Image (cartoon, rainbow, N blue to C red; front, side, top):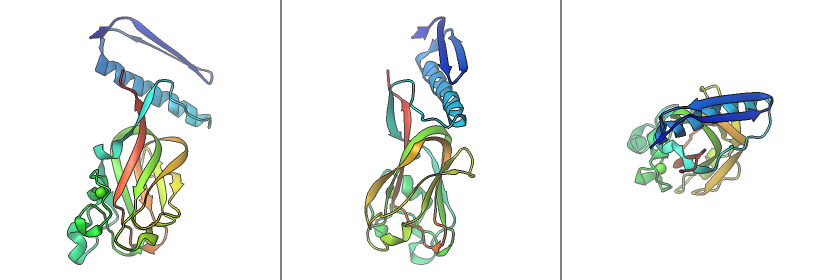
Length: 204
Ligand SMILES: [Ca+2]
């Protein structure tokens, strides 16, 4: 299906965006809408006001599309169970021995990160804590979001019980490609699932 000579004209905070579409497919139109919204979101961020998508949107866990890394890998018998990708495997199982959690060594400032491979508008991050032991270790970890690894804080993990799944909302939606969980102390960091809840245009 094709759209001919459709004109998008958006006014926002003194800015006017005019885009003419000619011979665009549905897929191209959706990509253009996302790009336009990212531009508008950046303008909104610069003006420090709240962001509300100007189109119908849905929340989707985009972490499943990303690539995960972490500060290091737990050594010894747990190495095979500790890989960073275990936090974005779509499985909230919180038993470390079942292979769906991550685990670093006990060093200062351990971190876990997902590269979403493109920028998204992120409303919240859902964390599943390890359930078979040691759930207190993750408390006070910071959730950072940014377009580079130098990111701003979305939220702090606080009061997350052993094995609990909890959603941490950013004060306002944030644009970012990288989501990092970092502990500012010497500790093990283990996470069983990270879900990055992005606002995407609703299917038409
Ligand atoms: Ca998992």
